Image 1 (cartoon, helix red, strand yellow):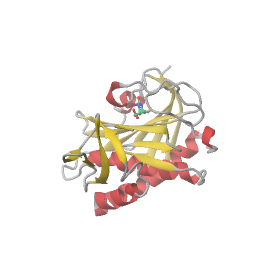
Image 2 (cartoon, protein in one colour):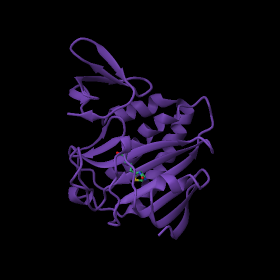
Image 3 (cartoon, protein in one colour):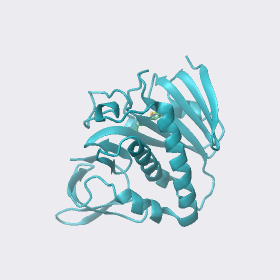
Length: 237
Ligand code: BTN
């Protein structure tokens, strides 16, 4: 329990692997920025909206990346889109034959089933941002609201460290682009693989057409009577 079993350096990141933690989100807050906390399993894996993220020791990937977030001019919540993009491209590298789509705001679907979830938390004390990502590599839970899948089921065969390294190099690249050119470049790339864009969706119980992603990542929903700008929520079909 809570034992460091591996520690390596990759690019500018210090990767620290634990056997079991309650949640990498919590442990990450005890490490400096540019650290990545990985765990083989989590006893209290956190999902969005206080949901549980199933986190057994089964070869799936659970990690949190800690970044310094003290530049007031930057909108760090956009990094959830950037992280989704970086992980989508990482997954695609290991098999290009699937439909891998980004579901607003930050899920990844393979063949319409969820394989990856992303959670962002700000640590007010350190002013660090913690980006937590879970990827079903080998197995997937069956008791979920959305249909789920695992990479192995979709013929994507990769070990978690290789996927993590691919993610981190993509993340570095997009992070530099984002700092240099702003969100527009990320938005453009994100939208190319967006799930249900232009189609009828249900967000936060409201049905309408997913018209566009605003310049800051807000979802634009056209209902029968009005156009709504939705900043947070989940898409259900
Ligand atoms: C979601 O609900 O879609 C977000 C899931 C995020 C899960 C990851 S697993 C690694 C990190 N630690 C956690 O406790 N949660 C995130």
